[in-house]
Image 1 (cartoon, protein in one colour):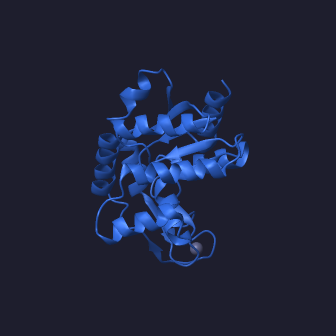
Image 2 (image 1 turned 90 degrees about the vertical axis):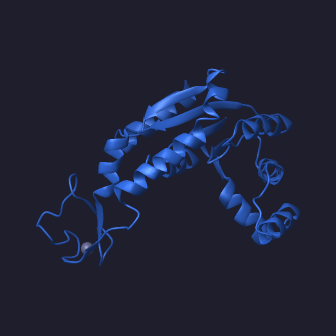
Image 3 (image 1 turned 90 degrees about the horizontal axis):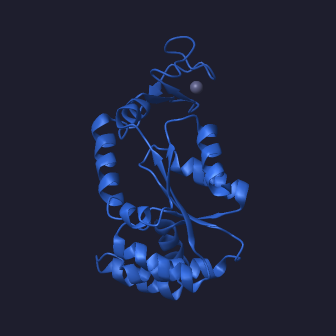
Amino acid sequence: MNIILLGPPGAGKGTQSQRLVEKHGMRQLSTGDMLRAAVKAQTPVGIQAKAVMDAGELVSDTIVSALISDELASMGNDVGAIFDGYPRTEAQALMLDEILQQHGRTLAHVIELEVNEDALVERITGRFTCASCGKGYHDKFERPKQEGVCDRCGGTEFKRRPDDNEETVRTRMAEYRAKTAPILPVYEARGIVSRVDGMADIDAVTDSINAILEG
Ligand SMILES: [Zn+2]
């Protein structure tokens, strides 16, 4: 079973991928991670990629394809692949079809974790953590029981990530839409796109994804 998981930052893609890896023994193929690993391991593709990046150029689709191909070759045939952050263009989508075919695989599902942008802004901008123990809180959904005091350690200092602001969240959403817009029609035409409410409870999202995979 090979799938593409789509969703903007904050939709819970990482958490859901992790659960698929644990429950179904799938492997997550993140092109960024694979690239870093190949460069570090100095594989032939890694050496090629490093030369391109050292020259300040973008890694070509051909190099990314070679990375994916190497990774698939290293996996058992019964291990499913979760593609994350790839493909981003129609050309890459078609190239992925070819690579999968070469490895005797097909793409079964494209699952998009849908979010309501305003709700996502509220979810992300409300986050803060205890500066001492790191416990997470939320302005609206999980305030400390005693105002200004951490439930877990009694700390009184809290911090927010600078990225957790409305402008950044909305910019990321726009980037996500621009990136997925070119590839969704390719898969829609094949009838393999499913949408899951990414704003639902984490376990409910997992159940929905499993239902799609088992359906
Ligand atoms: Zn604390």
